Length: 222
Image (cartoon, rainbow, N blue to C red; front, side, top):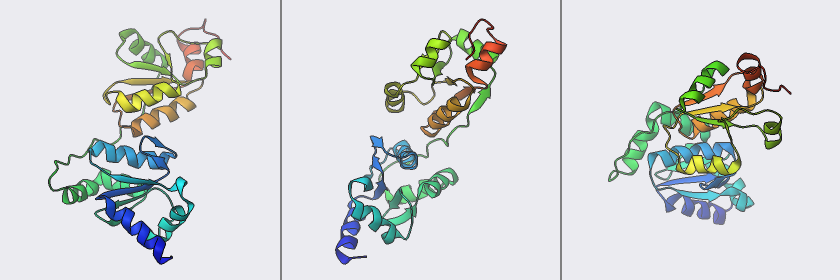
């Protein structure tokens, strides 16, 4: 590695007690792995620096040589390389990250955020009961065109604007129920929101197709 590039990365790493090399920025991560680390750091409510490697190809390759680690994101704590997404996530879950952050920020009260919840798969009948109770936010991850073919009253279209609002503003204890056509896309959406820290996340197994067969035979199948 060139001396000039190493000195540049040294300066970035030492700029903040916690520093993240990522794709995108904390407001708009450009990959899921970067987003996972960002959400973990945000959950700890600590300050951290960041650098978008997509904005600079020299740093994007240089940081891999610097840390001898082949992928992005890369997290540095107290000037020391900690690891990528999987290692950071494991360190969060086993408490190691919490202890490191307590040492790094002795003047702050560091509390470990809750570990990510697991998606609970429920039947259409169970989802119907939750819908009637109005106790959960019911979310349809299908496209507007699909909703024109068949939809269940009370399920709101999950578009990108709503996703951003939920991630930025919603209480993580809000109960969520996701549904799609057959259950695959909604499972992915549910898992994403678990990663964002939501603690009560359900998925309608079999999607609206199963709803038509088990709950409302008048609902068109497609």
